[in-house]
Length: 103
Image (cartoon, rainbow, N blue to C red; front, side, top):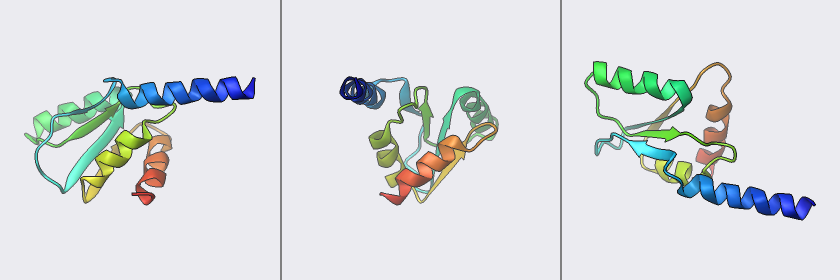
């Protein structure tokens, strides 16, 4: 049963990496700052960027358990700084920090 469960998790991981639900939106060619967010925080980020007339790349995670680790690593590699926008507990922040250390 454990083997079957691990296989399912592997398939879900592949889905998480390839599915458009985890996508990069907006984006300038700036290498200084990228934003990673999910859920309602994504809407807040997009509204703020519009209000401030900023064009920054935003990685929206619509499906993050399991995390699309390759997609996050590739996104983080492109920028000097990455801003994580989420509500309440820093779950996403901790995971991105862990992955960024591997880059």
